[in-house]
Amino acid sequence: MRSRLAALAAIILLPVVLVSQPAHAAVGIHVSGANIVERGGQNLILRGTSHPHAWYTGQTQAFRDIKSLGANAVRVVLSGGRWTPNNAADVAGVVSLCKQNRLICVLENHDTTGYGEQSGAYTLDQAADYWISVKSALAGQEDHVIVNIGNEPIGNNAVTPGWAAATSAAIQKLRTNGFDHALMVDAPNWGQDWQFTMRDNARTVFDSDPDRNVIFSIHMYGVFDTAAEITAYMDAFRTAGLPLVVGEFGHDHSDGNPDEDTIMAQAVSRGLGYFGWSWSGNGGGVEYLDQVTNFDVTQLTSWGRRLFDGTNGIRATAREAAIYGGGGEDDTTPPSAPGAPSASNVTATGTRLTWTASTDDVGVTGYDVYRSGGTLLGQTATNAITLSGLTPATAYQVYVRARDAAGNQSASSPNGSFTTQPGSGGGGCSVTPTVQSQWGGGYVVQAGVTNTGASAVTGWTVTFTLPAGHQITGFWNAAVSVSGQTVTARNVGYNGDLGPGGSTGFGFQASRPSGQTSVPSGYTCAT
Image 1 (cartoon, rainbow, N blue to C red):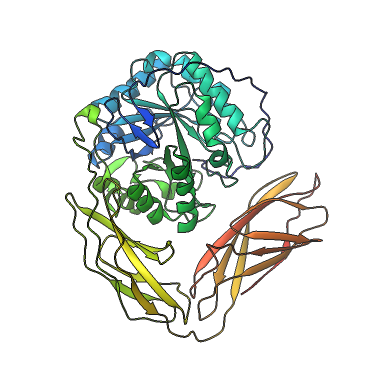
Image 2 (image 1 turned 135 degrees about the vertical axis):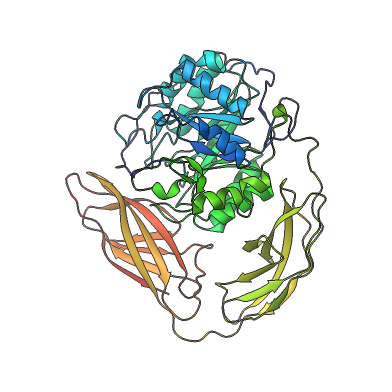
C-alpha cells in the first residue's frame, strides 16, 4: 500500500530471456487448481492483516495480538535496502514469531512499491536478489511461509517489457536459486490492475513457473468501489482456474471509497483469502487505515472492528492452518436454500425484503440478494435487507443465496417479485474532479458523480474540455470518447443506476506537452 500518491512516469526494464526448467514436486503450501492448499491437501484460505515490521521492528507483540483476534495469517512488510534492511537474522525472527503464534507468514518486499514513479523504488529483479540474500531464513519453511515477491511493483503507465516479463523473470530467478515456496505476485497499477494487465497475463506468468506454484494478489482500493467491479475481477480468475487473494484492501482511500462489504462477502463466498491494510502505524494522510491505535490491541478503530468482528470478518471466517493443528475435515456442505424473498415498504427506489432463513451444519454467515439474471443487489448477515437505488416504475424478480464461513453457497431461493413506485421530481447530477497526481508530461484525474435529483437515474454523461495538446491515454469506470478537445464520459453497465444522493466515479489519465501545468476544465454532468 502506498502512503501517498506519487507522480506517474514510465518504467523501463531490461529484456529477459526465460528458460524452461523442469517442474518440482509440490512442497509445503502450494497451488492446486484455483485453490491454495497445505502439504496434506487441506484448503488454506488466508485471513489476516498486514503488519509494517520494516518500520516498526520492535512491535513484536503485534503477532500475538493479530492472532488473538482470530487471524490465521499475517502479511509482513520487509525491506532489502530502500528502508533499513531486514537481514536474514531478522527475517528468521519474524518466521519464528509467526510459528509461535500459529500464523501463516506471508513475507512481502516493500522496496518495489511505485518503481518508475517513486524515487528509490527497486525493480522486481532486485527484490528477487533480496530474497536470495535471506534464503537461509526461509529454507525448510515452505509449510509456514509464502513469499510475496514485491509490493505494488509497477504504476499506471504502460511499460516495456512490462509486468508479465518482469514478474516471470523474478519467479524463475528464485526457482533457479532453490526456492520451492509458494510465490505470491502483486498486480501493477499500484496493485489495482485497472488496466487488467495481471488479469490478462496471469496464465502466461503461472505457466512460466516450473513449479506451477504462483498465487496472484490484487489490491482493492478506490478502483474497486462497486460490487460489479469486484465480482467481475474475481470471476475472471475463477473462469481461468487460477488462485487469487485480495492482498490488500481498506474501508476508504484517497483514490476513492472501496466497497469493503462486497470485497469481504465475495471473498468468503468464493473461498478466497484476504488481508486488510494495515495493523497500525500508517502515515502520510492515510492514518485512518490503522486497525488499532498505537499498536494497542485494546484500541480497535472502526476499521479494525469492521475487519475483525464485522460481517464476513476475520474472527468469524478464519480457520487455523492444519500445520498448526487447525482445520480438520473441510466443510463442503452448503447451507439449505433460503425461502422466497417477500417485499414490503416498496418505494420508487427501494424496498424491504425478508425471507425464511437457511440452515447449515456449521453456520450461515450471510446472504447475497440477486436480481433475475445474476446482478447482485445487496448482501446482508441476516434474513432481511433494505434495498436502495432501484429504478422507479420497474418490475423486479429477485432471489437469495446463503453462504457459510467455508465459502459454500446454497442453491437459489424461489423468486420473489415486486414493482417499484413511479418516480417523481426531476433528475440531475454533479461532477467533482480531483487531480490525483501529476508530473511534467501528464496527470491522473478521479471524478466523482452524484445524483442531485429527487428520483433515481439510470445513466449519466460528463463532458469537459482538454487544454490544447493534451491527450487521453487511459480511463476506467466510464466509456470515453473525444471530439477535438471535448471529452465525453458516459457510465458503463455497472455504474449508471444511482438513487437520489447516490454517487459513483470514473477516472482518466492524460498526457500534456512537457512544461505545462494546465488540467481539464469546464466539467458538466447530465442525466
